[in-house]
Structures are given as C-alpha cells and as structure tokens.
Image (cartoon, rainbow, N blue to C red; front, side):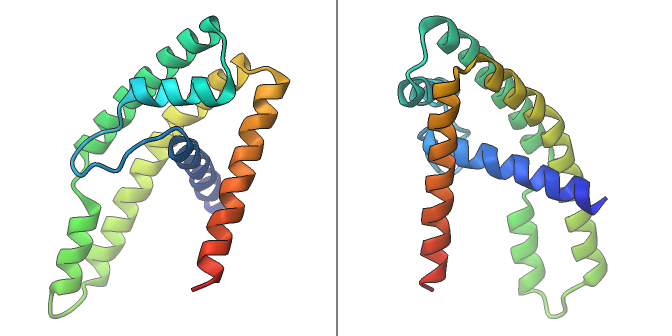
Length: 149
C-alpha cells in the first residue's frame, strides 16, 4: 500500500513538475489552460506538428479528467484550515480527510500514468533527454531553495 502511494506521489510530482515547466499559472479559482500547456511543452521540446497534435489531444483529455476529479472533491485546504481553527483538532476527521485525498490521488494516478506513457511514446530520444534534464534541473533548484531555509 505504501509503495502504491509513493508511486502515485512520484508520478503526480513528475506531472506537477512538467506542468510547472510548461507555464501553468496559479490563478486563483482557475484551471490550467490546456492549450497554453501544450504550446509551452511543444516549444520547449521542439515538437513537430504531428507530435504537437498528439500532445494537444493528451493534454486536453487529461485536463478534462483531472478537472472532473478535482471539482468532485471538497476543498481539502479549506477543510484543513477549518480544522486548525477549531478548539480541538479531531484526529478522526483528519484521518478521513487524508483518506479521501489519498483516494483522489489514486484516481488521478489512474488518469495521469497512461497520459505520461502516451506522451513518452511520441518523443524522440533527444526530446526525452531534454525533458529529463528539465526535471532534474527543477529538482536541483527546489532542493536548494528549501535547504537555505
């Protein structure tokens, strides 16, 4: 069970990193623009027209699936903030929130993993290397930023 959770977190971390590099904005209350995401990935990986068309299909499908999952769940951040504001933190409610979020992450992983496999299949070895280098660079900067605190 822990292995499955760690794998899901790793995959979502990779997707999050990928979305970070593709220019997703954190506009409050908005979902990422799939057209902008696809355009940024295509530009940064120098995709040809066929690859770009397939990537656009993948990103739009994934965005629709993840939006549906995200919209179906209550806002866990607000729920956590409400719990913290209470006089007494309810361990059972906290466990239920964690379990619900873990189930959502598992459902997201079921959508994200096939999308990543499809995306990987359209890339050339050079494009895969470029993407891998960007992921490594992001991790290096993330690690250094937190190490300074």
